[in-house]
Image (cartoon, rainbow, N blue to C red; front, side, top):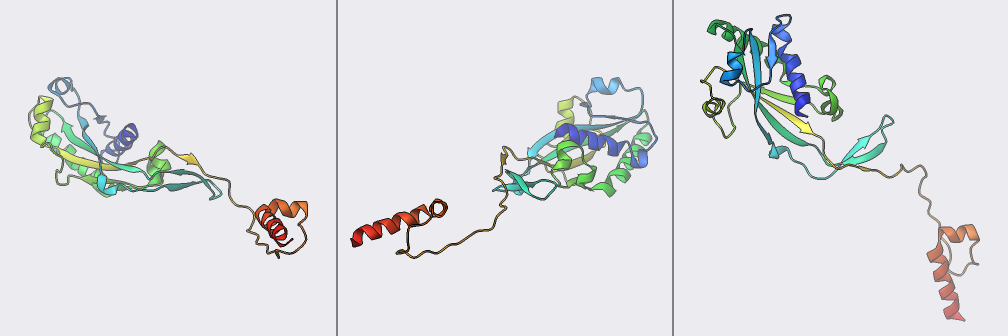
Length: 218
């Protein structure tokens, strides 16, 4: 799931206002060593937090349908996870970094809801949209200053990007075959003659009760 989100994010950051710029998109931790190796402008999207959005958790099972709209499997509903990225721009000049961050905002803000048709792999097969929150209120337990301290670097302008994605529920199990015949209801008198063999197969309990009734009356 995470690598598919990275794929979507890389495509978004490399497009929009940054189309044709040739700027590298990296997912590495932006440590001092990583920054020292930069010799060209880059956008870094560092995944610093991953946790379940428990408010979205659901119970029960969901039906999985085939191309004919028939139920073929059942699976638990998806679990939703919040992936938090620290998006930063890296150039030699501060002004250029600010321009890159502005381009990132211009690229991501119109795409805060991604439909399933634009999602790869298992993300697309869920049939659910993916929600992005761009530069929203920081809600994770660690502050950005603590994150930069853990990375061994100095505090840097960044965009906090949160992507909420569904993770398919497991395990799933096969559904029974679809019903192809309508229900049939038959009524019989208790004192009628014993049913034919094919009828006995359909109503063994009624035949047994009829025999017991006749035996009691003898």
